[in-house]
Length: 194
Image (tube, rainbow, N blue to C red; front, side, top):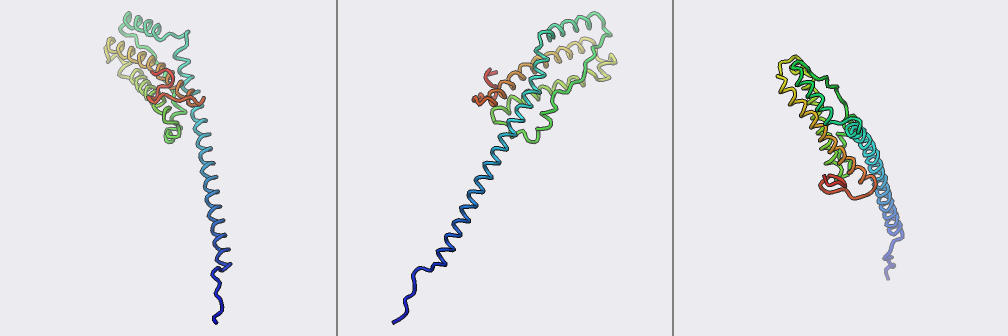
């Protein structure tokens, strides 16, 4: 009679249990790490949205200040320019995109519904900055540009600021909706539907 060969080796069972514990440990650690990464990303997104909302709201408050009427400023300036062919308005330089420039490489951290209105607003800010450069250029200031053309350029500049006010409000609405857990309009315009 041959000796009975055990069908079950306890070492095999112990190795199998050990491998299962290690695999389960990897899965749990991986899930925890993904959860930590998700929370860090969400915290960063909230921080960035708050900073952008503050930066945009600042410019919106300036442009929408009842003490400073864009239409009134335009009218006064055009009257001065009409009255004196040599008059050239002094346009101050502006910097209203510091926060956005710093997060630009990571703009994807923003929620999808927030990206469009924020980017549209900042594109308008960049266009205003380019217009300011033109209005401050030597060519414009030296009188090479006819006064009627300078008036048109100044009119465009004010129109661009009015559009920035509208786009800024839409971006603030979208950021506010996102930060307060409300759904953001899929067209990226916030509550207002602009």
